Image (cartoon, rainbow, N blue to C red; front, side):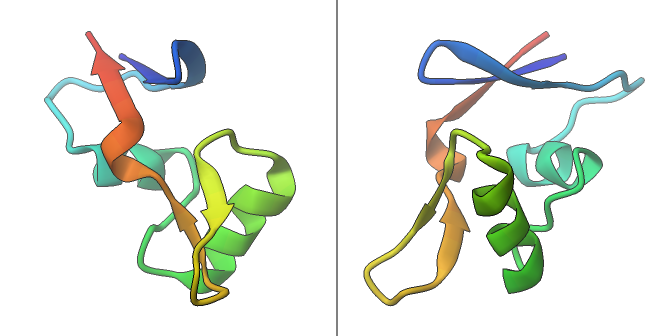
Length: 68
């Protein structure tokens, strides 16, 4: 499956079952519940990563689409 953000591919995963977006991101190495991982995604230039209004790193999970 491909992970798409803003019309661009941001990751690709091979799996034998369906995944949630959070599980797919974890497979790419980004645990959305871990600030260290979120900061790393931001520093890596992951397109969906951002700093929120509270100064915390995050990923726009709702903006990511999965194509099978």
